[in-house]
Image (tube, rainbow, N blue to C red; front, top):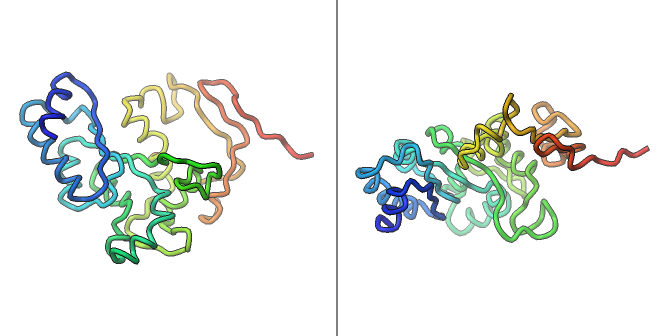
Length: 224
């Protein structure tokens, strides 16, 4: 990996690596630390895609290198029971450890993944962003079980993970991810208050209007 990362970083590229297990993350971080001795990576925002099982030492190493994480809350929602059955509850408690990454100072984004399917909640990889938010906030999977309650994050933290943090990972924070002067007016008007509604209602939130770069691209039909 060192030989793969070295020339890219020497050219100033932003790079990422798909990696799932904790040993895989360690191997990537080993290579990055070797590259960092020649070319500082702090400002490059190298991104670990997936990084399912954060460990304390790898979190500290990632934070020191300025490494970011791009992970998938809906996989915890669907797969954590199987993880607990085959590998044990301790592994399920670390699975998609968003809370650990954030507390360790690692910029973390939440999103979906490939093979979306047709239903936003029941597809192989659910793509309902409000389900992502509910899972990150409650840590409940589809059977209602909670593994690793320490991984719960606040509603504001979860919202930032799918907006501002995603923009940061892509070097787009000056254009996207928040509502501020000079930013693109990308926004959604929702049918209920995300910050105050009951936790179990978060997944049922629906947009009534969406805007992209200041232009309305969707408006819900209002029932008479």
